[in-house]
Image (cartoon, rainbow, N blue to C red; front, side, top):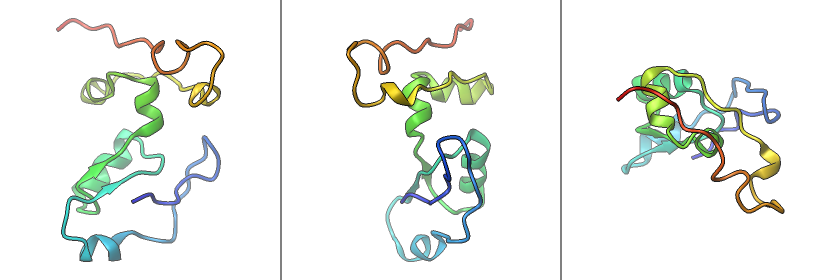
Length: 103
């Protein structure tokens, strides 16, 4: 389920609509999306509003997103212009750097 939480590509707002009624009647694994940050996602799970949170844009720019979330490490900024089309097939999906840390 996608919550209408984004005004623009970088501006998140608190929506007055809630997925809570759907969450209450849906019996499967409930997944939400909609511009969540690490903190927003953790809060949504902790409050029981969802089982899982999808991170589309953040995952594109951070191929190691779970590790970055675990370490509370800085995130790469994504480039929306490279999401779907590019004259360079490497730019966008495969050129974002991984976090350099000791194992």
